Length: 420
Ligand SMILES: [Zn+2]
Image (tube, rainbow, N blue to C red; front, side):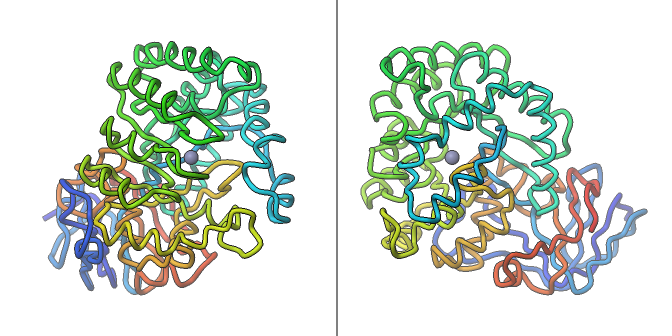
């Protein structure tokens, strides 16, 4: 039988299979569906066979002593922004908290820079970031707006995302996050800003500029009531919902997610057992962002809001049966990395997650966090051929061998889009 592309004799194929209809939890989360010394056959952009067989193909990748994984799904990023805040980071590591930064600049500094940038400039920078992601093994990414905070600039960012979709091989899922924080000019008129966000939503829908609506439900963002108001308006317009919940304190975002049947609730540092129960009942994915914990040094003694409870909390969520996903939260302030591998490394070191939990959370469960698990996130017959070959002999090396990019070849929609 003849395929278009064949990956032959991989030492391990991490299929992350049998979870296309329901995310992995419990014992399934511990199972990576590993096939040894196996092949993957690809035809017309799809996986047509997985296992040990005799296919032929024009193009053959010899994966001897290498491993193959589904492309990572980075289900939470703020990729479109202008300017760097590396100057701020030194102050942060010296002990200044994220909330402290927020008052003196933080998100609003990036808003200022992003408003000044043209659509073309943002597209150029976005393409560069996507290239970095792709070379680190990510083939699908969610991108939020949220550094415009007025109609013109929020629409500009969403149009940038649209441009990126048509000019880059990666699959991109757009999210409207007009409710990221209250802009300076609405400081004394929060209600006015919430109204503005709600007025932008139908325009976004008309132009099909976003599939999801997200809100930063936090002391630094929006109250429970404001968040509910915005998310309900978005739901009415047919958008799916996401929420930044319980990041810097407990603000009932996870419960709001459960009430409104959001697709995911993200961060969850301060989520309680009751919150998690509600999320499980409403079939919500918990998106964990350990890169933020790492970058903000929140587990290092001396931090003003030391989160030493986090590893036990994450373990509790997993044991309770919450389907968890991992993402970068790539942004210029709280987590400046495009690399899912880096995030996976931090999930092991800071959250004490197992290799299997981490890889399933970065592939199939992350696909569920974007409602795309029927198409991507695992290596199974019929799915899109989004695959990555790594130059290491077993999957644990991806996490154990930290700070090093082990990507050998990236295949997107059945085509080789990057080769080391
Ligand atoms: Zn975020």
